[in-house]
Image 1 (tube, one colour):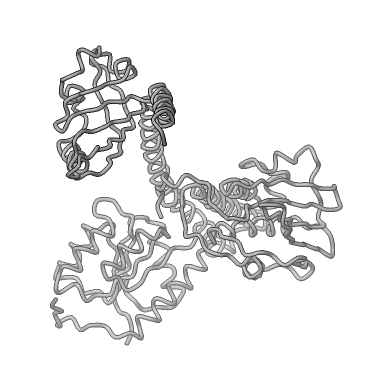
Image 2 (cartoon, helix red, strand yellow; image 1 turned 180 degrees about the vertical axis):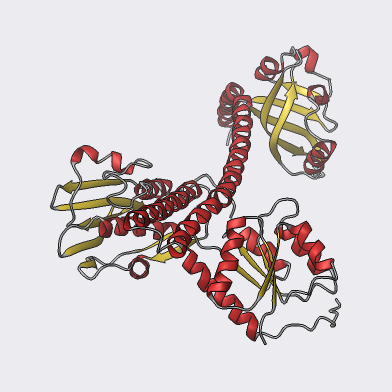
Length: 382
Length: 143
């Protein structure tokens, strides 16, 4: 190639490099230091952020920016890395001229001489103070949340002991009164005592329901591949369903990754509700699943009394029952527990119904089966 | 081999009544002595006037010295360590169950709300410990 062509090529390269440098200076703090950390070059952004003028920086050691946040070990490790010719990347808190602090995402690149030893260092930094502040806030919130969780767990522990003990006492005494004083009690008297025992049993279910509801968000179980077909069969066995009600799985159910106990609670509550409220001589409960993009869409349908559309939202609220609690022993916790669990997994639950004809509970669960609950929350008793 | 003496550690009067009543309902000739908390329980065990119990029924939640602490004391004592202890408690929580088994309890039963179920549980306990061999009091277990 002749001189003219070579010069042209060199000019193009120089222009390209100048463009790169221009762009880089817009984004990053750039500095070049000698082997000992003495500042040889600093770009405008460096001056802008550190609030030092170029004169105040050139020739000084980079140490003037030390904010005393990082340990000796931290810097020893940094120097060891770059002295051996390797690139170092990390977050550093620096101190500006006015004493304020700023965080920078830093990359330090050693430039080697002909012998392969570092001759100078180029440091490229991006200011991340805002992000760091948010990270700290986040950590604080997580800490608070963990503490609140622990308090809730302790509270639940106390409830399970101190509420249940007197319940047991009352229940036992009611039974003993009937046994020991049967000849002295008329039918009305026995009736009252039996009502008392029933109230106690209800209170006990309520306490269990509240505990289950409060535990649902906190207890983290192992995620396993749950075979819903066998889970439903087991659930049905446990429920002691009366002869006149049939429970059918109308489409094969998938296997999903979920906490086994929570899967059980969802289906158990839905199926037991359908059984409990069944008002037809021949009861039919059908369970199905269909794939809907990245979700599984489940339905639990029954031919029971149905729900008026104006109650469609209310049924999922905690402690809401549609009948007087005496009519059907109901704590009003079941459906809200189902909703809580489904939503924990990122799914939705809703109901459609025709009064006197049928009710269909719908819920979705993501196919990937990923648990969306923040992994860092942990906590709880388990 | 029948159970002759049971020591019950229970702070709740009605729960204690439950045990007594259940024993009667089962026509057991077992003598039942009761201590209201861990401290009293230890006093009872260390008093030579009292016969050494064949079985200890222990509630975990008691004031002053709770069940787990009592358990620790007994298992550290070379003469008392061999008495079988069955936990009878409200707590279904794993953490209590674990601590109890780690301290070598022989059994862990949760008290049901229903009294009849309770009688069934007591029946099982009595039957089991009537059959299972008990350690003679003069044997001291080392280790």
